[in-house]
Length: 113
Length: 112
Image (cartoon, rainbow over all chains, first blue to last red):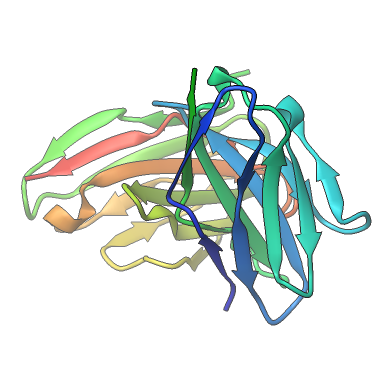
């Protein structure tokens, strides 16, 4: 069965600093990986996804993630964060031929002025 | 285009009561999902459906039931509500399993 672990529950960072949100997954079959963002009192929206091809994936709002099969990781990065990036970020994995999309526990990104 | 609509947005239940959370999407999506979100736990998949007439269990199905009689609707039924079911529930839909999920605004349920 697939699972997702987000290694940090909270990440505080100053505005304009770089940030990395870590995600590790486990699955015995091919995986498809996603990052979603949730702003306060809203549903989730897609940041980026990896299905195949280039392991470096670029998403919206300047975010990017790198798929590393040997380390079973899919870390999210942004070179310079803004106050508006303050939100909760979720890594998710879709594996095999089922319809299941499994989410990690979430990481709260707190951008400080 | 309304997207994914969930009702009600808020509800308080007494232990042992039953209720149905409604979810409707107008995007002709095949895949629909119900998740619950608890602080520090992320989103847990309750049930999902890959098309009308087809449903399957997710990670935490106990205490819930679903049906999918039409493409548009995917109601979630809580039987005999328990305090452990206090949570925020999200419905989501997708055209296919590898495409973006579109989420509703959530339904906050409290069981006292």
